[in-house]
Length: 284
DNA sequence: CGCAGGCCCTGGTAGC
DNA sequence: TGCTACCAGGGCCTGC
Image 1 (cartoon, rainbow, N blue to C red):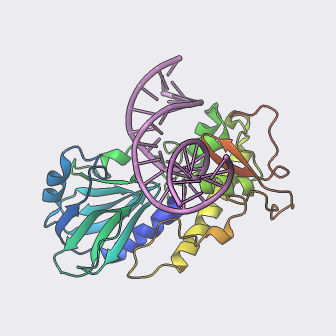
Image 2: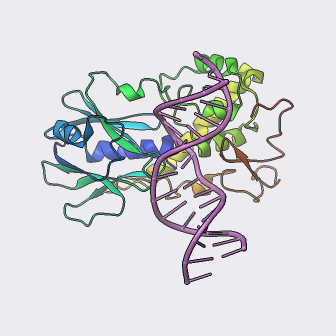
Image 3: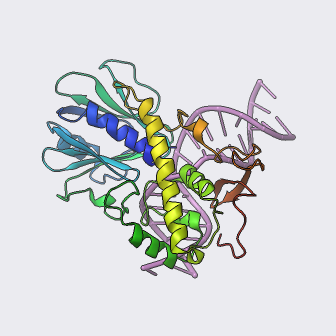
């Protein structure tokens, strides 16, 4: 599933593929992809025609293209969204949701999304970042991320540490996979109460979050192709590097105990029962 | 305000 | 074989 590393890989792809080009026309397929654009598809398409792409930006799992009139073409991949490139006239893939044609008649950009949790919107409210992104916290690889402020906020919470890592208003970009991986690296149980963490525990956890994100971005970067605007997150390029997530019944790479899968927050959590002991007062 | 849980969505697969 | 149930889970929304 696309989390920060996958979305960053897509952003880099869009940076090379789309920046500097002018949008000639857009096709929208189906009603769901623009559900966050209340003005509707005609408005969306009308505002995009003739706009030049100025920059490809990202915060957490949101990405957007800044356009030459200071509006933003905002996208979220959800669970299955992909941006793909194709030659004009190539057959439409299943689950094609949007097609962007460019004035240079070169390769087009397609938004493909099987499960339609993803979506697009156009924001021309004039802000530096799209209004829908304002409430999203900085992500931990943003140079402006404030470690001390994060530690303070986290320790004031009264919840489990994994819930907090998945809260995009506290720290963005971390999803189920990299939360489990970072907690495994930090030897921390997902139900550890945030209010029981010492400041040093938070610092250490944050180091593990950054390490796993950096490793995944590096892996995504190596598999990146100039004409294929990666990536669906299911392509598995980082799978071999996962230590706990998806490895139920396999030995912990650190201690050999068998990784467990547990239902938590209506999704699966993977942990090593020896390295990540259940706390005395868990906060589920 | 903080926090928890429901809901949206579809294709693959396990089980009967 | 064909049906049902379950699984993947990010983010918005609601209710307490």
